[in-house]
Image (cartoon, rainbow, N blue to C red; front, side, top):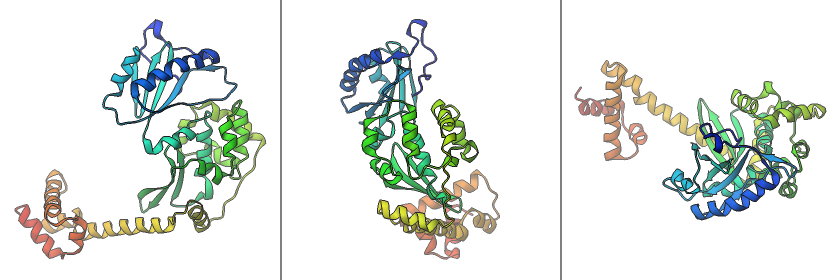
Length: 335
């Protein structure tokens, strides 16, 4: 994924860019070998039809829970293997090969998200910016569409769908057109601009998070996209009321997001009430203890004792008085 992961190859094994014909000839040779070695489904990630040279080859692998992936890759006799998360890079006939290990639940979504260059990244930004909602962050990726719900410093992800075709429908993009692919990045740019939620401002550097800013500065396609949309300065202004957009999302994905959010709020507030009732600060004050490893050990002993004999720790704290809890804590820790 980028063609720059292999740093320690001997001179005669160093990777180079492949021309289109030799690239696809190599894919016809390599893909059956990988499929046989891993005994699973595989999928070649496609790029623009008019792309003439390739610095690497991205291949999705349906992950069956392999014990030793580098050992399996060694059957292809690479000079170097580099693992980074779920991506394993190695050299094969002077081309960098990137195997993207993909869990079964994300297989279909990944086969859509990774196709056609940076399309998935740009679609993700369209979805992420929908509604500009406080306490809610939308995500589109290889694992589907989800929403990050935030309350009082705590957060929880809620899956909206694993069917990435829904992303196209939601954003007003033609999925059949996506399946045809794009001749070059400029056709893909026009496709993104055609979304009903395309807005010039959301892609500008000053409106990106620091993480996205650093990531996209290393993406030549994103930089080219910024130049391209200088002549497409459409801007969408969203209403300040979150409820409108949450209701739209709830209807579209058939999930009651406000109800799920309230469950997060209730959980955070409940946990806070437990901490206030019999947490570290209260215990320190009650027994004249100082914060440190010894206090942590005492609290762990207390929690393990409760869970081993009474089940849920929080429910136990909630159902007993402070005096009862102090007595038990004192007895267990010989205070």
